Image (cartoon, rainbow over all chains, first blue to last red; front, side):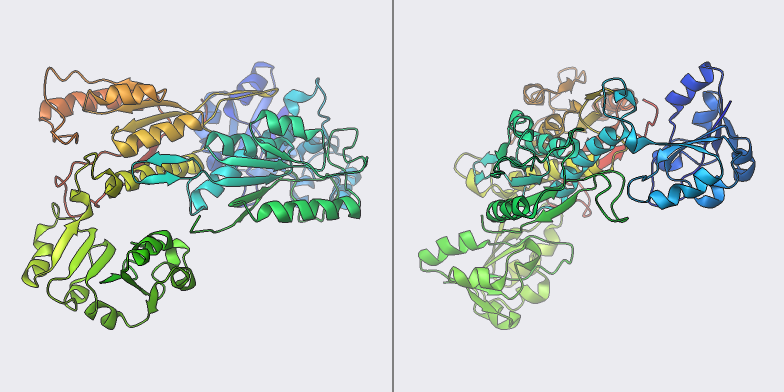
Length: 285
Length: 285
């Protein structure tokens, strides 16, 4: 069985679908792993790193695709690549099935079997394949680093002979995996953190990280689906949330948003939470 | 008495010598404070913020200088600005007196009184004016943020269903104010941190922050001057240090350097510690 990893075509993509550690495991299971030359470069992995664990390296993308039984990718491969796969081949990637279902039709028509990473259930059994949580964790961590580097003040409180610098105040909207990781990271750096989520159940997690939970009065409305994701909420809840956030935003230095409702957004929403960071520049406080 | 703050001329400089909070105190003491328009912009402070606390705003740099009794600046003002000050005026800034003493001659010749912030002793009485420590604190904090944002791995250890990501290993060279702040910040973010300093006395501070102290065998050599700064050390100590660091560098993901020996360096050394960050890119570990 040939498992293939291509170089991702999006120039802003620095991930690769397989790292050498995983290649080693697949090779040990008698799979043959074929890597397009340069596939790992953006992730700091050389062709030689792959070759060292038993992968075949090739520069011939078309030949790679023609021989592929399982194509592993980060993003949905381009139609011209999919057209070169044999019928019955398997494709695994963040396929955006809920956001762009029509884009998957060519795969159906060509008789490919497709696994969308984002639809792997977050059940105990499937946890080790939970790509959304892994990505959300990195997103939440990175969002805080980006915010801290760009903010005109430091996150931790400093008490020095020259005076005391108060800690930064950070407001995190959305307390899913990304939001909680953002809260944890901002707390680690010493900020005063507040977390908001329409799901009241998120309060305990937010508070356990040492942050304050901003609670909106939902009047008994259900805001979480059976899978634990946030539902799209009613206009009334939205309005109450907006008022609460607007009030809190006035006393915060930085707002990090991380909410994501699967399938609800336009095609511009990526397959995992991408943070939007807002700063309040207050020089005198 | 007119206290003047000009817009800094270095385009990469985002600091300003007085913030509105300090202006307020000076105005309350009957000083008249004159700010060049736009002086605070890079530090997110508007002219209006200064005007609100009683400062005069002016766009006429020459007139400002002619009326100045005390000129407060971050960096040493340009000779053409100093030439417009009246004899007897006072200038306070990071003047680089040890690195570029000849550049201060024009000030002497014009009968100006100059205070170099970096020569204010780190004594108890002068602590509240200790600009070097303030800057070094920010430098150490920021160095870690820059490193964390650019590194191809996360600082904290993550234990998830998909596996465990080990914490990053950070080596900080120099355990003065900047180095200790870098150690503290890297530790906060969850990294495994090692600190190195030629001053054996720094070991306690390094260890108190939860980092390991790399100790070089000095054989009784004195490496700290009376002011607590690192002395330039002998070639033998340098060699032993290099060997220790080279050995340690092999197992580290990131090296942050922060050492500074006052007056010892070329004119390219700034008046406060600027970190050099080295990364070791290791994709498979």
